[in-house]
Each structure stands twice: as structure tokens, then as C-alpha cells.
Length: 62
View 1 (cartoon, helix red, strand yellow):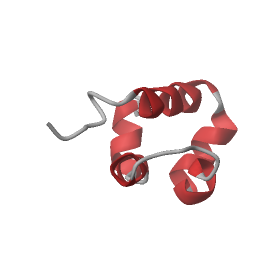
View 2 (tube, one colour):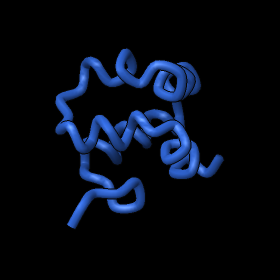
View 3 (cartoon, helix red, strand yellow):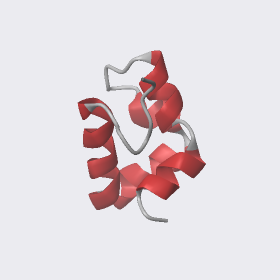
View 4 (cartoon, rainbow, N blue to C red):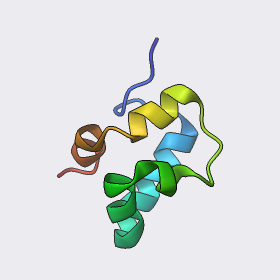
């Protein structure tokens, strides 16, 4: 079953949690996801999911 923003891995859930509480990180994630995610060990699928600004905004309720 492919991962989705609604059923994320622990790594994706942790990043979304951080984005929901850290405005600077959230802005960076939406504007330059590669830079925001550089320090995280993610699969290609996780990185692609978190690089989709529309999906991230939806997951954050915006």
C-alpha cells in the first residue's frame, strides 16, 4: 500500500508535527523542501510526498 499524507510513516509524521508547531520550518518546507528535509533520512517516496506543497498544506489543515 503506497504511503499517503493521511497515513504517513513515523518520519513523515514527525516532520509534519514539527511543521505544525515551528513556523520557520513550515515556511522552509513549503518554499524549499529540499533544504528543509536535508537533515532527515527519508525514502524517495517520503521525500516526494513532503515536497508536494499542496499535500503538506492539506495535512497541516491549510
